[in-house]
Length: 249
Length: 200
Image (cartoon, rainbow over all chains, first blue to last red; front, side, top):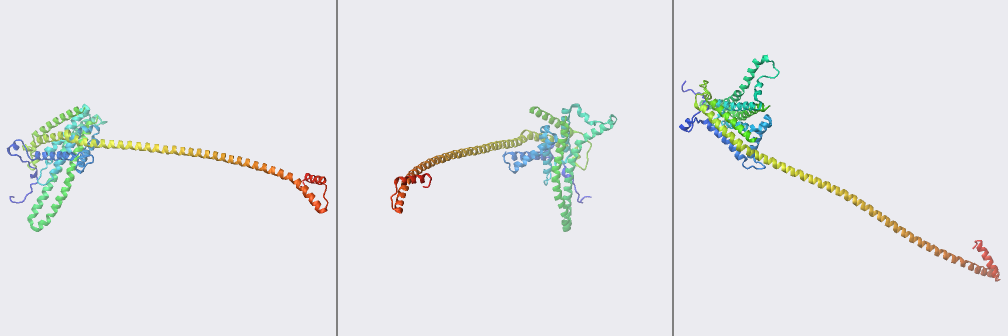
């Protein structure tokens, strides 16, 4: 009914062209803008953090070095000695997602990781890279993985499609996990925020009752900070695991 | 090898970019009215994938060519510096240990040498003392011998005059007792007789 208060929780995910007609022609929306901001923030963090190049690092430099070593160790531990070739990719993947998730948590900002097109593209990139590396390292033996060892050939018609389906579900699960977490968090923010606005219309009682949704939003922010880094880590570690399988001879 | 890896990674990324574009341009009928993310007819939704591909590619190359090697160099320089410092410290420790060992050996040698010197000095002193004692002993012996000789000579001389004293005393006593001067010959014979019998 017209005039009744409603909650448009998905409005925050809508894309709008920026830079007028040029932006419309180039399909330039807030998503690429926030990707650029995220990339810029990460590059600035690395550039200014490592600029002193001190033997005894300050806090800023130490944070850059810790970031580097965290991803480096994770990559090397998961993939092995061949992992160094994929370290920049894993680093880029982790910090691209992390910066996107965290910048999206700031008020009035946009979260580009809440779009499945983006998360799916990242997942497909990872998946394709793993397949290319697998075929390069293993050749045609790569396809032997779809038939588990020691299993009777009679079961092949059943098992091989299941294995292929399992394999193909990897990018889907990667994409949906990140997308769903981001969307769910921001929808909940929006819902509880809208509750506060709606309760404000009920006078003093509404103001008192609005404390609940505000407190929930504060708790949710802490939770989303955890989810933001956790999802970036999960995406990166799964990419490492897929690449470990790919580099194995 | 590094060049091959770089070319390989570049090729992989070109392939990935192509896949991004294919995914973004893929026709779909999954248009949901509720979620703007699923409105694939919206060119902005697909456009953001192409933009994302370009931005991610730039990000990747900025990281792999500039930023990460720079951070890696700083970490490598530090670990090299720490390694070098540790090597210097280990070398200094080895030198110190060697110097301590040499010092201890020198102390041991010095102690042994000092003992030998002391032993030698004591031996020399003992020999010198023995020599001095011997000399003193010889000198005393000589003096004793000389003294004994003097005593013997004096004794001989004293004993030689005892007869005369006995003779004169006998004569005097006889004369005083009897009032007669005894015969000298007889007195002399009696004194000689007593002397020979060790009465005198």
